[in-house]
Length: 218
Ligand SMILES: CC(C)(COP(=O)(O)OP(=O)(O)OC[C@H]1O[C@@H](n2cnc3c(N)ncnc32)[C@H](O)[C@@H]1OP(=O)(O)O)[C@@H](O)C(=O)NCCC(=O)NCCS
Image (tube, rainbow, N blue to C red):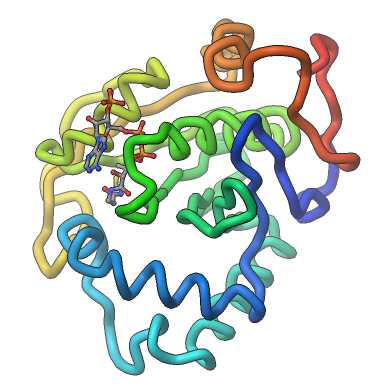
């Protein structure tokens, strides 16, 4: 296991994950503003003002907070880039060590880029990072039952449904039930080759210099 915070860029077959910086503001803001109605039903209601997509300083504060989490090893936020374009975000949050070794995965994609499999591919890249670089034991994705596209992502990734947690998270101003999907490091190890074949197929195209390649060349 390497020191948390060292890998800043993760590379998949089509997607590249890296932290967002000030220079990403214009592109991020354009996508967030355009996708606002599309994302609204699936996200916590924004608190306070100004609204980050309309305010560079709020975006910068958000980037700094993510950088701080990265340094502390409590969270890792990434922009998802495909063909050099910003297409969405994925993150590991609330990392707990000790006997839990757990993190939560959240994601979203630009409405115009939906249906291209970018998010499941980004999840596989993130799973590799979480299990093989950070040494975590369990990842959870929590999804509102009526969010069919997101549940389809969980299905494509063979995630294990653990049942419904009632009134679990505040989403768009309401306490919403969520299906909890999980994967542990044992399940990752069992399915690793299938993930690679399906989402990162072909010769190893995955990896960045600081990302330790596994014994199977992933
Ligand atoms: C859920 C989400 C992240 C999926 O990302 P994605 O990169 O589009 O994932 P996929 O390409 O694998 O598509 C998953 C399913 O979405 C559905 N889908 C495809 N195109 C779509 C579109 N234009 N609009 C809505 N749903 C679409 C399909 O059912 C697809 O399954 P299929 O590939 O078997 O047909 C994305 O729909 C999204 O950002 N939604 C809004 C925010 C959100 O729900 N975040 C997750 C909260 S848990």
